[in-house]
Length: 97
Length: 175
Image (cartoon, rainbow over all chains, first blue to last red; front, side, top):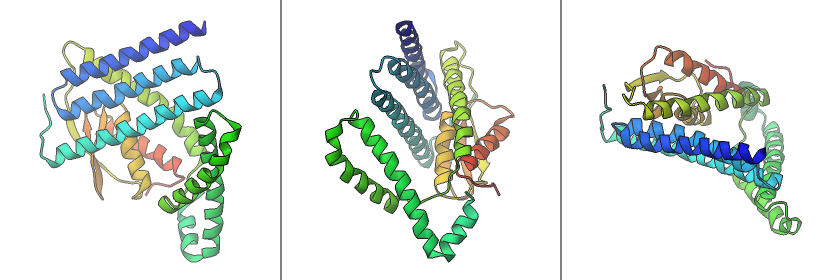
């Protein structure tokens, strides 16, 4: 039972990573691409971490997985902001429909 | 935990400030000890190194990030809010990226700060980037400039909800 749940969570996580990458390729400018990377990958990694946590042998491993997710969350949100701020400073115009 | 009277107390009664540093120090030491336990898989003989490391980390953290006010109730409210909204945010952007017609119409939006400067604002800027359709692009004294992936009429309301949640985490009242 747990095996199937893990499998489902890992596959769902992979779908989000794939969607984030498709967004990176399809979205028109730096700002919209950042949207795809930060948000989709956050959920993708969250699902992968949840799937792996179900297979963990101890609570310390669950904590480690959770910690990895939180650190990536912090890093991706901060880096997305820094890239967007740098793009604004260099006067890169945003794409409009 | 009201930040205003704490800030005043910090200014007017140095003895209280020592108490607050002590209490925060114990609390952070417990968190660092938990972190050490996680990183070492609870290996008992690792504490020979772990205890000095936890002590040093606590002192360094007190020097780098002085005690700030926060609220347990605020955090308990924030966590499920953030969890569901960021899940929705990921699903939303994934759907738009995979959609054949790419349904986006980006724009910039300015949000005037109601949070006090410092940690609460940085925290909110990071949170905003993980919520549906919004990305923190620039922050200055007066406002947070946000890149939105699609225009809707509810961004102003959504952001004030986020700001209220963040204020709750830090036990603050909005001005």
